[in-house]
Length: 121
Image 1: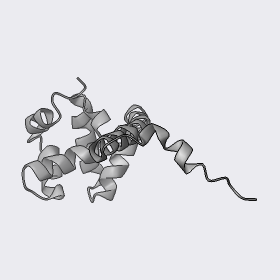
Image 2: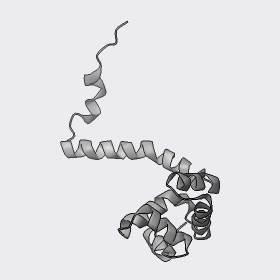
Image 3: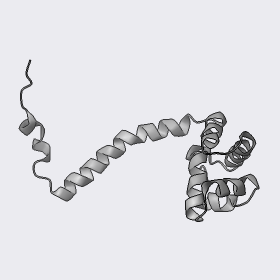
Image 4: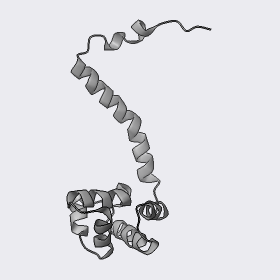
């Protein structure tokens, strides 16, 4: 069984696009592919999943619970709690463990809220 070569027919709608337009089209389509996955993850996370992520990042279960509770209190669960710790660490030029422990101690949550532009909104 052989497949008919229909490449030229299938690419007609792209033939007159510039390299820049092709690149923009690529990123538009890539976004359309990824958007449902991101939305699914945002809507289907749970404290248990977020604690599990933090455990794999090296935090104890007690530390993970504290960080997740802080994220819930501020409407940030949909951002991903591991992402919150990572982004805070990068923004403040510290390691991940140090950033997470600051959150455990109730510090830097205002910075996190600013980084994520107010939480759930």
